[in-house]
Length: 148
Image 1 (cartoon, rainbow, N blue to C red):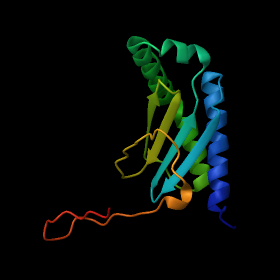
Image 2: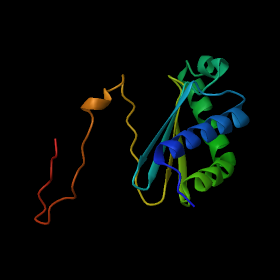
Image 3: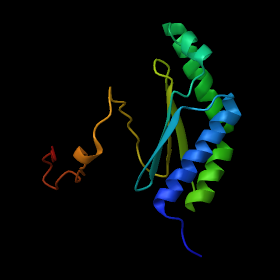
């Protein structure tokens, strides 16, 4: 049996996430971005909140309420999405977390087996042709490696 191509897997995961979000919230995100790096899958749902949630999130208290609501909703229903991701990728999901940005309505979901995930949401898109890079571990002598 042939393994699915990565682009096809990314598309399948994006479609599964879109359907999952629609099912649990009744609101589909405008777009879904899927990024895989080694054993970490990061999914960003763009404009994932309803207009009412965006209105509620305009105040600090409302934003905290919407953020906690989405976090709890994710925690209580993510099992089915994890199973779908496992069936698409053929790899078990060990951990899943979600972060919500009430100001923009974006939701970031991370599925990982052994990594720490740090998410930085940029103010605008970075052109793909200018993006590349890796970082090596700290050298044995203790000096910090600065790839940039």
